[in-house]
Length: 77
Length: 458
Image (cartoon, rainbow over all chains, first blue to last red; front, side, top):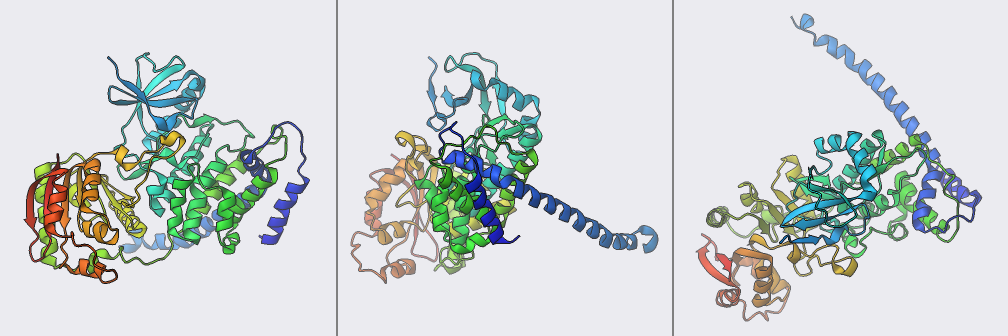
């Protein structure tokens, strides 16, 4: 992911996020809000990661299967 | 009469607290936590975590004799031999503690519960492995709710590990100064610019710190905002990979290689081991603290006998090596920890009572102080009397090695400083230690000029 895009996107969110006078926030609340801000991005990346893992596993299985055939008792006899 | 006393480390949590009753460690669960505790049990989470050795197992006590009126239940957690703190751990000990916390949060979410705090002090080492000890740290997970312990996790684990990886191992010691972890703003300032190229650190430390600063003085409505469970799992996964990516920094240490550069022969080393074994056989200690134990060669003489042993050292690389060795060999009775004897862990926290000094966590049954006294007396200008007095506060028995001036290690120490140590001889050593200890046995280590003493506290 383009780093600059990520930084400007996240910081941009800070600027446009709406405020309402309901709670006086300490840095802990800044952390909670930050999760909401980055949640979507991380969620997308997580989905890509899981998808990539599945593809990798698929090819791993495919490349492993010929060896398995070689190891069968029938072939070794 | 029943003797009971609250433990000072758990007073912040309204859900309950630890106390001792007639010498037994118990935890009172308050009525306010009843619903979450019952969910912890009924959801199967407690069973799963304790079976996986991630959460300390406990027994429910049937007695209704509560410590205070707000009590709902009393549980008796499995005993931890030694309480240790994050500023006493090596890099990999802290990293493993972080990964255990993440693992627990992942499993908890599957059971519709979530960790409400992620303090490094909730992890202890039991039988060589990190384990979560606060049974009252779980709360019902509500869909859409952000992880309330996210900030704490970053402060207690991610920030110190990143600082150790990117800057210096010794920055792990900041935990001693900042009891609730390293402020992310400080971590962000201390970390080099290159750490921003690490996507996880950019997110969870640098941007996170900016967010905290940005919202610090702004009133914002948090009640209507939700985070999906998928996004929450992504956050946890991102933290896990951030921790996994942080590696022990490559460095060299004079002390890490100590045993390769000892001045005495293989025969002397073997004889010293035999003598320590003999003394351990005489004492049959119930616990051993090996002071300046390096990578734990002599600590293992005790731990292999099944004695709970702590191997202390000042060298973070030696402690790391020792921990990795214990992990690899699944050793249960030895715990490597950081200790600077010239400035040992003090009592810290609220009223200086939350985290204990070593003196307050002792005394150990037996102290091992091998090839140590010359470093304290000569490198640190500590008079024998002071060393003996402090040792007598730390342990009941003492196996100590005297290294005389003629020894090449002492000569090496003296080569860079003026020899102002006129009292540094065996006679004065024995005289000053005799003020606090009874010398039981003295043995000369073969083919060396060193002497091994067995002493018992007066």
